[in-house]
Length: 195
Image (cartoon, rainbow, N blue to C red; front, side):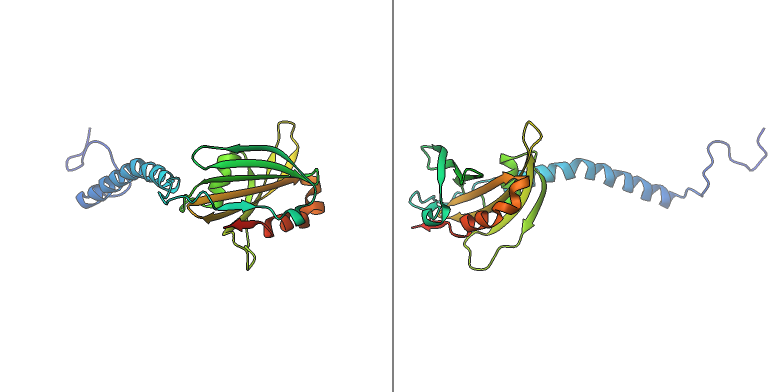
């Protein structure tokens, strides 16, 4: 039996005033609103990043390799598309895989997100410093494992010209990275953009 003057029911270790109840209620409502809004904003931002610029793409703009510096190479595949996009894959010195993709310009999409579209399971992406005097805007490196567990080291660069995004990816077996590092830099730094 409760003594006279005492309240029955739940007891809090602090005094629950009306003002405190309003603050708690507002905090819960704010957290609920954030839980709904944040994923929506993230999704919208990702969609915005992946949008094409709408810029007119000049088909005459080409990114080529300096054949005097590239050395021995073999073409593995070339895939031109009717709209002007294309991809190509060559092997240089029987060791360096070189892949080039030309796609419509997406100016808000950074190099990392570009290459993750090609290699969703990439590991350890790091942005690298872009040397002075080169015409590409971003450079990065990462590793990928094949189906047999072998690791490959990749260097990727991104440049935008004439309404196009050019993504160039060079890779070698991880154990050969140091051996071919200079050759990979030579290929990247002496690419030719025409016209």
